[in-house]
Amino acid sequence: MFRFAKFYLNVYKTLCYYTGMFEKLKKFFLSKVLKKKYYRTGKCKACGKCCTQIYVKHYKHVVQDEKEFEKLQYLHRFYSYLKVIGKDDIGLIFECQNLDPVTHKCKIHRTRPGICRRYPQEELFSMGGALSDDCGYKMEPIIPFSEVLEKTAKKKHMLFYDR
Image (cartoon, rainbow, N blue to C red; front, side, top):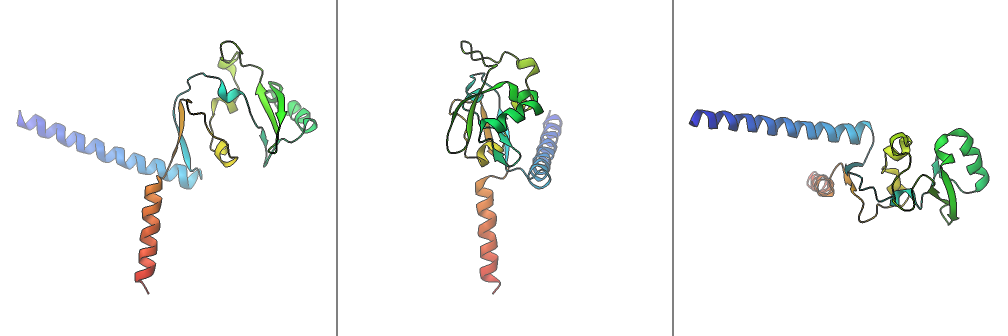
């Protein structure tokens, strides 16, 4: 009986080791290769909030006027799904016409565009956006703040004592 317990303990230790290695590799790949700062966790609760109050970023800027938007509609099918509902200091504000106003479900969910499938993306935060409090998704930092703070403190400590 003791032999089996020892065997399972060794299996557990091995799994923990490889899980730790996988997490380190994942962090490296996301932060250094893909240059990401966050990764998405959770799942969609199908509330439809992400389909309203949308800004469209094209290349490096947010779409500012309706003439520019009309040109974009010829470039990609996704833009034809959007309707202008307002404008503010950031740019035009859109709403997806495929969102059913009663059920708050997407009418084309199975064939929805890639931008909808990848929501939320890190760019949302770089534009000053945020997820709603009841959204099922969370954007987790790849490198936790505590780890960044610890590395910074070590560097300052090393610089101070190297003099």
